[in-house]
Image (cartoon, rainbow, N blue to C red; front, side):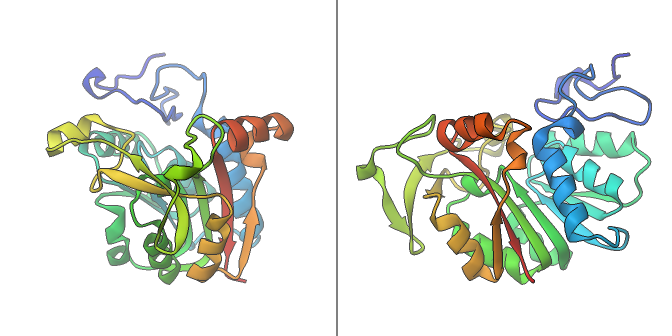
Length: 257
């Protein structure tokens, strides 16, 4: 059965199973809930909150079309998804309308404004940090609003792989070493709306080197920092080759123990 979603605002990333049995991308293939990244986040959160998630708050930053936020709400979290783009946000509202999840909310806003939504027990920051020009300051902001755990899934600066740059391109910013990544040169909100997977406020972003990321999380205020490997899929050897080497992507978890 094909969803009645308005095709002028098609989903581009999150295939979400709705209550009427339909999927936001038309078929059950590649359902987000079955993606290793989503499954790993759910496993981790269950381990961190063994007494259950009811009454706990989580925020999904730069939530795109709301898929991860949906899974957290299904776990029982009081869930907020923050998304800045109007076209993505309208998809989030479509998802909320077609799910019976009163503990799921969305806000259209810049993630830099997270403080006005209060504190959270857990923060999910997936596919966002590498779109920011001040990642150190952002992690410090998140720590000030986080009671327990921060999950960061991000690209990093590397000399090999799909996003590699030569060492002479590496510079220092906010006390960490990495490189600048050109996001876009859009001059209007209309142009930025079309770039669904790019930054919003900054035209370039700063990618720290891999070894700086756990130090950044620790210095932000998380005394326990772990690397999570199951997010790459059941074949971790292949996943490391694809993600750590090929795609220069990693997942770190900061915990206030």
